[in-house]
Length: 317
Image 1 (cartoon, one colour):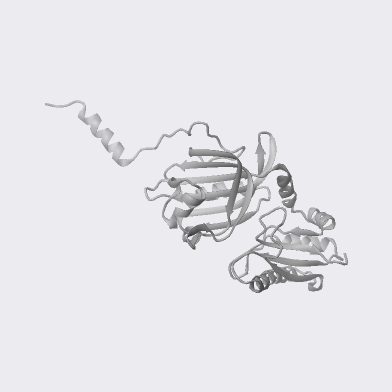
Image 2 (cartoon, rainbow, N blue to C red; image 1 turned 90 degrees about the vertical axis):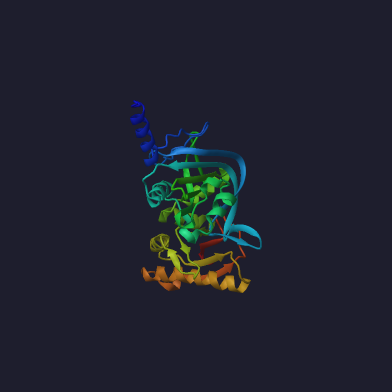
């Protein structure tokens, strides 16, 4: 006897086997962060807030040392934390999703503080469970991307500033997630960070005249103390060209493993690498002196402070 329901049942089973789009609504009470846009078709699957969070911003690969899981480098801040996890629709490469969110984070002159990809980030298990405290973010190490950056935006009609962490991972079941942490700094610290991100030559010259020392953004180094991001070089060059009489100390700071002497030597090497680039752009080498303090000046405003280059006005200015 012919069963009229059988063709419909077969079609349903075939559709299920081939896969169907997951129609998932955002979790209750969730929302995108301020004016930050989600990847098209993404849904919020986890959302958390903490009004006064002590937050460790990971600035290095995840590792286990002496029984403790931690980033090879991190800095601690306190502020209002928002955590948003998106599930990404099927059919998109992780690199495209990462680039979509990265572009938003780094607009308006924001600074990339650390980025990694694949095994260079360390264990995905550590990122998922120890950093973001969300086990659905665990996946193969080759399928992960991470970015830490400064952040500036508008929340509740007020300008806010702080730090952001972006993590994109594809799990073994092929589902992809993009996770974002936004840490809003208290108003006084946010104001300092916003001032530090004003990176026009005129603004930097005025800050040097007023404060005598300024952290240069857009400079980072690899483990061999070689510049791997030299965006800040042009700013130094422009400032020294604006004021032909200005002389500065280029001071390297470095908090890392090793003896004091080793860290001072390495931080001075970084300062000299900066000077070499500035000289190559046409500035007289006699106007700059390299110094390395290693870990001896751990505090700066705004942070992060662990690895930085400062311009300091020479004493006779």
